[in-house]
Image (cartoon, rainbow, N blue to C red; front, side, top):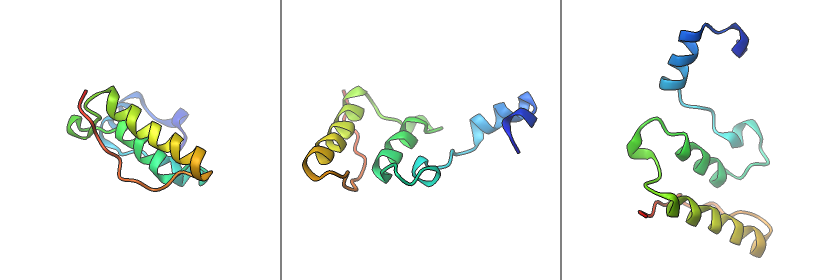
Length: 83
């Protein structure tokens, strides 16, 4: 079903209740660790969110460092640093 066929109440429910598909499953060129970062940013439960910008910055910096050093992004556990 495309979004155009959804009723507004269905869209609201989907936004609140459904977990989005991981980006790396939609586009296999996206590293799974980047997909994990995106899903953490889109989490429904506040306890699953980053606690501050430093956590996001650290995870993205590690991805960038891996890319420059290894020409790929290594699989890591997405961390969370309180800012």
